[in-house]
Amino acid sequence: MNIKITGSNGYIGQLIVAELKKKGHTVSGIKRNLLYGTSPDLQEALRNSDVLINLAGAPILQRWTTDNKEIIYNSRVVTTRNLVKAIIELPESERPGKVVSASAIGIYKSGFTHTEESNNFDEGFVGDVVKDWEHELTALPNSIKTIIFRLGVVFGKEAKTIKNMLLPFKLGLGGKIGSGEQPFPFIHEKDVVDAFLWATEKLQKNEIFNLTAPENISNKEFTNSLAQQLNRPAFFTIPPFALKLVYGKAATLLTQSPEVSSKKLLDSGFKFKYPTIRATLQNIISKA
Ligand SMILES: NC(=O)c1ccc[n+]([C@@H]2O[C@H](COP(=O)([O-])OP(=O)(O)OC[C@H]3O[C@@H](n4cnc5c(N)ncnc54)[C@H](OP(=O)(O)O)[C@@H]3O)[C@@H](O)[C@H]2O)c1
Image (cartoon, rainbow, N blue to C red; front, top):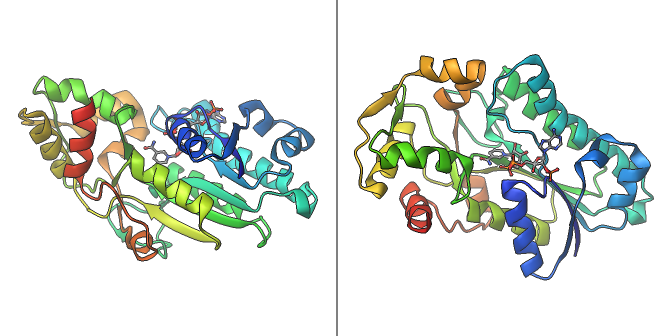
C-alpha cells in the first residue's frame, strides 16, 4: 500500500514507518509545514494514497502557558482539520480509503473506568484538545474508514517517560507519585505498532479503540514493578506540589488519570505481545 504519515519523525512515527517498510509498503512522511499550509499542497501529498496515519502532535507534558497551549491544540486539531479538508477536496477516486489516527486516553475523566462507549469526558484542557482532535475526523465521508486509537502511556526503550525515570530508579531514588493510587494505563511500543499495522492492513470499519495493555495497574504498582525489575528499592514518594513547581497545571498528567479498558480491542481479535507491566518492563529493561 501507499501510506502517508504525519508525525513520522516522532517516537511512535519512526517505529511505525520502519515496520510498514519492513512489510513492503511504500511510506512517506507529510512535512509539518504542509499541515499548516494551503490545501492544494497538502492535497498533492495525499493524492492517490491508500492510507493516512495521523500522529502529529506537540508534546503535551510541558508548562501550559498560553503559547504552549495554542501549539499543543493547533498541532492536533488544526492539522487534522486541514488534512480532512484536503482529503474532501480531492476527487473521490484519489482520496485515501482509510485514516488511522492517534488520540489519547486523556479524553476521559480521571477517577472513573472507561470503555470506548464512555462519554464521561475530561472537562479540562486535555479533554478539550482530544475531543476536538477526534471531532475533526467526523467530517470525513463514510466511504473513508476512520480508526482512532486512544493511547495510554507508551513504554519502550526510547520512550521519554522510561528514559527520564531510569536514572533515579537505578540510584534507588525512585518512588510513587502522591498516594500512588491513581491508575497508570500503559502500553508497550510493540503493541502500539502492531495495532496501527493491524488497523492499516485489516480493519474495514469506523472504530474507536482504547490502546492500553489489558492489565490495569496503579502508579504504585508500576513503581514497585520497575524497582523490582531493576533490583532497587523505591521508598520515596514524589509530592504532587514538586511536580506542580516544574510543570504547573500540566502536573495533573502525572498525578491523576482515568482507568481504561482495552476489552474491545481484545474482543476484536487483537493479540497483545505485552499484556502485563511485568512483561513490558522485562522486555524494555533487559534491552536498556
Ligand atoms: N507517546 C505516548 O506515550 C503517547 C500517549 C498518548 C498519545 N500519544 C499521541 O501519539 C502521537 C505520537 O506520539 P509520539 O510519542 O510519537 O510523539 P513525539 O515523539 O513527540 O512526536 C510527535 C510528532 O508530532 C509532530 N509535531 C511536533 N510538534 C508539532 C507541531 N507544533 N505541529 C505539528 N506537528 C508537530 C512531529 O512530527 P514531525 O517532526 O515528523 O513533523 C513529531 O515528531 C501524538 O499525537 C501524541 O499525542 C502519544
